[in-house]
Length: 226
Image 1 (cartoon, rainbow, N blue to C red):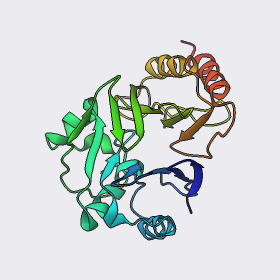
Image 2: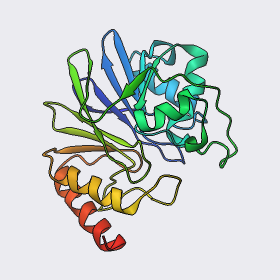
Image 3: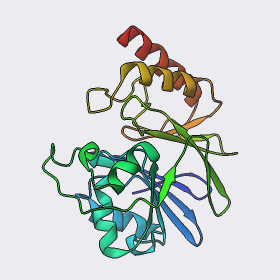
Image 4: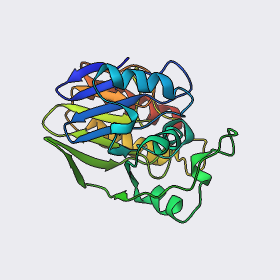
């Protein structure tokens, strides 16, 4: 079930290959950040129901990147609703041209329908949902279009697969992955003040998240020697 983080912000921790999912309950705007693979869609539906929402009510989906464990659930959502999809330009442009290679769907034997990304995100852009404003940081390294989202005036950062708890970070051996870019992205994160981090996998970091970002940066810099 979703864990309440703050205000309209809720967090669903995955115990499988699926990504974690963040839910923003912003009244007329019902927003998911990442969707998992879609394999556990029934669990997502039940979890949303506990909060008085549903798959059918979702108006927007922001993807921290387009790997199948984050984007796969979109296919299920599109059977129930017509959410606006948001993704960084570096990966959105490829998908809008019909190139699904960065989703890794073929690698993992999954099928995705053609998708239309209407919300093509750029570095520094601020996206508004109700009273929440989300600033987009392009943080390549895990993939070229990976993003982190700072929920302004809350001390919360959605870190996707760029940064995980315990000084860990996303892998760089998938297409467009880059150790050097990941280290630079972690350096940027480590210089931003935030208290809570909502990562793409593993548990939420509820206290001292900037310190955790510093630890991830230092670990990556040492690991990759860049």
